[in-house]
Each structure stands twice: as structure tokens, then as C-alpha cells.
Image 1 (spheres, rainbow, N blue to C red):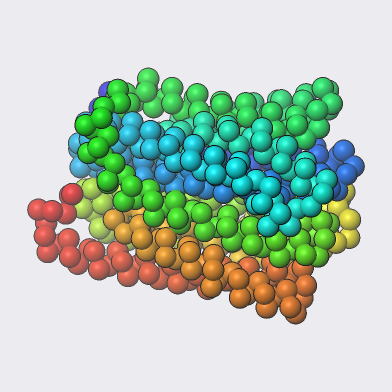
Image 2: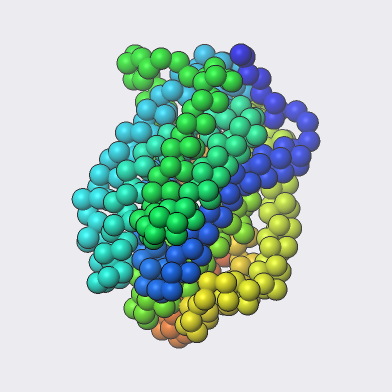
Length: 452
């Protein structure tokens, strides 16, 4: 089956909404089940278990973020090849990026497992909380390798414009997890261990469906070949390595925030854990937007359509701002319901209320940074994305969190984190606009090379 570049024509606003919403639906299904995990665990009546899952989530988020980084290379290179009408090249990039994703994930999981005790200690997990988090992670982390390949395959599906397939791949994991959670946690009385086992089967479902659809529907996988692997490795790593660094920045910054909150007690950590699970469910559309516009940017870059690339950025910002305002209003109205549903004590409730009332709206600036990352990754400038995200994770997080903590204790930690997000969101989006304008001027002077 020969794929065509569907994003080089038609309404960009429609492409953005369809790609982001279908991707978000699948992502939100997984994150919603993660939130339900937290809710089920909270029903066991032990706040320490909720805190333990919060600490564990910081490390699973790190492993997943690295995998998303390698999947960005799949989306960028496959979509660009299709935009240039080179289907054979797209197939070679597809298989080899999945191999590299598996290698990187194996290395990541191995390092985390070998350093697990020290990592949990650095995060502030102690005693029973640390033991529960470790047991959970030892079950879930090996399955991160399956998820890495599944996310790479989902990125390939988005690259060819198969938004439905990408959605169904992640949705399959959510459905499996939702079915198994209550059975394993309550019916079989496995508690946190049951939640971990359910997560493993969910990752297996994502892996199986995404790989099946890439191979049998789109015929985009070819047999591994050493010559092809060597030829593809450099262009893949040129995007994947900076993208991995870029994606590592956010979980590492979150790890620092978790450690900063842990100083004030496990109840505050439990509140932050709920916020951490609530955010991707509510803002899954924004999370998916960067992955959704990547193929749109890549195909139009391959076709040399710079006007559509510029319009993609402006349309994305409009869609993102409207969505964030609506969700923030809903969170403000429903904050008491959230607090009561998770049976949060006063300290944990303070964290959730702060987020729902004041900080949720600032997520639009995270979205601006996500959009700039997609722009740089798909326009041959992944190092700019890395520099921005590393900057946000360091000078955009640490000093602001320290100041916030000094003046407003645990709540100030989240306030400081939000201030850094605002500054770097604006900076990233401005740099992306400048990058596109500069590249357009250069490529319009070289029309023969503009489709490469």
C-alpha cells in the first residue's frame, strides 16, 4: 500500500483538531486509567500508598518520556519521506527507528532498576513508602520496553495520517487496564501489585495493536537489514538523541519538584501525585498537540509549503488557548469533587485546590513550548528544542521553586514551577516563529532544494 502526504492540502485547522483530538482520546484513556489507579489505591485507605504511587510515577514518567523522544524521530522522518514521495525510505526509517527505540529503552530500564534504591531516596521516599514504590516499579519498568516500541509505532501511524489507528493503539491499553484494575486490586486482593500487573498488560496491548496496524494495514515495516540500519542510524539519532534529552527535561524537573515537596511530608506528595495524574487527563489534548502537528509540519516541510507551516503554528495556538481556558474553568468548578473523591486530607487538598483554582490555566504556556519542540524537531533543529527544555528544567524550574518554597512552603513549589513554565513557553514559541520565517526565506531562494 502506497501512502500519500495528506497534510499538504486541505484545512490546516481541521487537520490539527482531528489529529490532536484522536491522539488525545487515546492518550487520555491511558492517563484516565492511571488516574483511576490512583483512585482505586486511595480507596484502600492508606495515604502512604498514594504517595508511593506518586514517587513511582516520577520514574515511570522518565522512562516513558525517553521513549516518546525516540518516537519523535519516527514521526519526523517517516512524514518527511512521505511528503517527498519516497515510500521506500519511509519504510526503512520505520523499522530502524523501532529497533533503536527498543535499544534505548532497554538501556534506560536497566539503569533505573540498578539505581532504584538511590533514585527513590533522592526523590524523598522513605521506609514503607519507598518499599511499596520499589515493588511497583520492579513489575512495571520491564514493560516500558514494549511501550517504547508501541509509542514508536503509534508515531508512524500519525506520520501517515492514520489518526484513528494511533488513537486505537493507545485506547486498547486503556481498556485493558480499566478492566484488569478492579479485578486485580480488589477481587484478587493484590492491591498495589495488582495495579502494576494491570499496567504491564496495558503496555502489551499498545505494543501489539500499534505494531499490527503499521505492518498489516500500511505495509511500513520491512525486514531488519544491517546495511539499512547503518544508513538510517545517523539521521535517526540526529533527531532522537536531542529529542530524548528534550523529553527527559520535564520528568527530571518534576522529580526535583517532587523532592522539594517531599520535604513538607508525604501528604503533600499525595496531593501532588493526584495533580500529576489529573493533569494529563485534563490536558491530554495539549500533550498530544505537539505529536499531532509533527506530521503536518514534516509533510509540508518535505513538500516545501512554508505558508502552511506558518499557519500551522498560529492555528495550533488558537486551538490550544481555547481548550485550556475551557478545561481550567471546569477544574475550578469541580475541585471539591476531586478532593472528596480521593479522600485527601487538608495538606493534600491544599495542593489540589491551588492547581485547580490558579495554576491550571498556565498549562497553555506548556502547550506553547510543546508546539515549539515539534517545530524544531521537524525542521531539522532538534538541538534548539533540547536547549529550551533543558533550560526550563534547570533555570526555569530550580530558582523559581526555591523562591516559591521559601515564601509559600509546599504550595510555593508549584507556584514557582508555573512561573518558569510561563517564561519558557513564551520564549519557545517566539523562537519557533523566528525559525520558520528564517527557513522560509532561505528555502524560497533555493526552490529546487525546498522539497528535501
